[in-house]
Each structure stands twice: as C-alpha cells, then as structure tokens.
Image 1 (cartoon, one colour):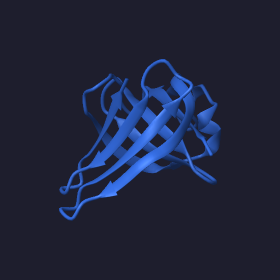
Image 2 (tube, one colour):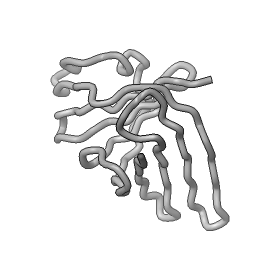
Image 3 (cartoon, rainbow, N blue to C red):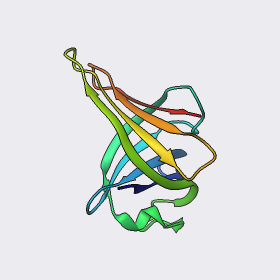
Image 4 (spheres, helix red, strand yellow):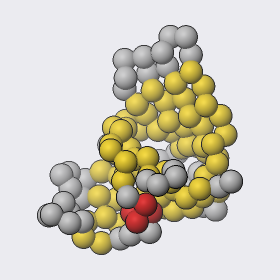
Length: 120
C-alpha cells in the first residue's frame, strides 16, 4: 500500500532539504545537504523521526528553528531493499504522483555515510 513522502526546504540551522517517508506513526527523515536533482548522489544525514504532521505542513517551525516549504510531495512504495556482505545497504523507492523522479535510492556505505539518488 502506498505511503506519503515529502521533500521540504528548511532554512535552519543552515539551508538544506528534508526527505520524509511516512511510516506507521512517524516519518523517517533524512537531511539532504544540497538541492535535490536527478541522477547524482546527494549526501544525506539521518535525522530522528518527525511527526506525521510535517508531511502536510509548511511554515514556521517551533522554538526558532526556521521555516519549511514543501518542494515535492507524493506517494511511495518500497521497491527493493538490499544488504550486502560488505555492510552496504540500499533502499529503492518507487515514487508515484510526481513529475520530478520515478525512483529514489537511499544508500548506506560500509563507513556509515548515506546518499540519496533520484532518477527519472
């Protein structure tokens, strides 16, 4: 069953983009360290789970944490999840209902660094 995703432009503590994936009671979240683009890995930092309200929210964030603006939203399905013997993992998502990308792959390297790649 498809679930919601959103990419938010967030201006605090520095300009970045947040990728949120709906789960049961929260949204799994990554900070993208540059503007989303196609076919180039974007360095990503996992963040604590966010409240589901952020899947629909735009505006100021409480406690002086800047503001968020929706850049892209839609639905996603988990297409494939892989874990290699060398410690690398990848999670490929099928993105639905948007004109930007058809897939997003979240890759974790053996050293723990993470990247998100959007493909059209």
